[in-house]
Length: 376
Image 1 (tube, one colour):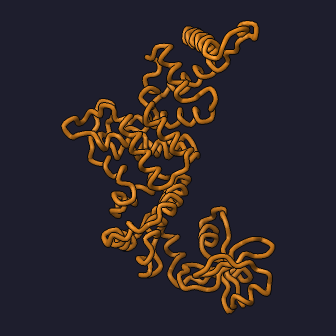
Image 2: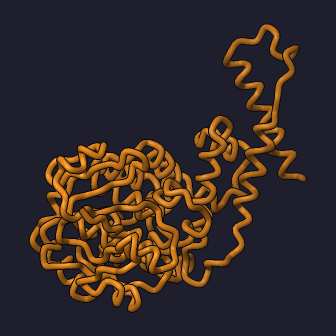
Image 3: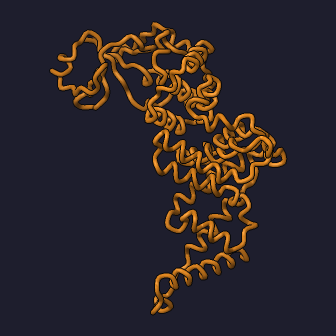
């Protein structure tokens, strides 16, 4: 029995990156051999065995491995030229069997998002196979949970926008994310959006969100903040009246379809609905600003409020030539929330008051705090 370190751990080692996890392949053994050594089996078709001490995965030998390493000698087993592709910064499929699993379209796109910062590009022949998968309609069979799993992981990558660019390059975006696909080719007023195209703007916003925060929830909200522009009648272009509200229904539909967790849904809805209010916050009346904070539930959910602010800032910066613009609205919003949240009522003031009257008294005190903060 011979054991080899395989997959991402070997790749990351060759790229001088920290390995996230280690996988092993066992050659010359049967399932009962591993069971006798205390390994725990998981899975059915191609069972994986968990090491009794480390919990790392050990699989019986299969053919679709690009690089393996002998842990004793350090020798590489590289029958498909994986090290050459690493040197050339190329993401390439191993065999024609690649087309047998449509999930691989998502996985390649995710790898592109992870390694784009190192200069990696998807090989032309791999892109061709990905387009073939899309053309044959096989992406329609993807399980929603798997689509979201790959998407969520892509949102955690250094350059998440690359995930969606690859899907678009391979004609997979209109099938998997039709709401995003609908944005490309839709113009916006050049005065506010020098990049003009709504789809281009969306990916630029995602790029900015990735710079501002590692939180995939913030990044998802940035990605979906303008979905409503994809439903604007062409006769109204380049304006997009009420796109904020129209985008909410599209976010809800997307989250239902892919069974996206509520934390993502809730923030995305808030960013879609209120991102323009963030941009013009200094123009809002005190009462309107307080209403905005209340609708955001900013006093009870300060962490989510901060996520909202970051996604709105990403929207402001995700525009051609404006990536480094000052966004003073972010600190203005934070100061406003802090000022209103700091209000407390003395117990003697509340004596004999019912719930609605207490709420009204608190609201008046918060308005006064906002007015004072603005004057300061």
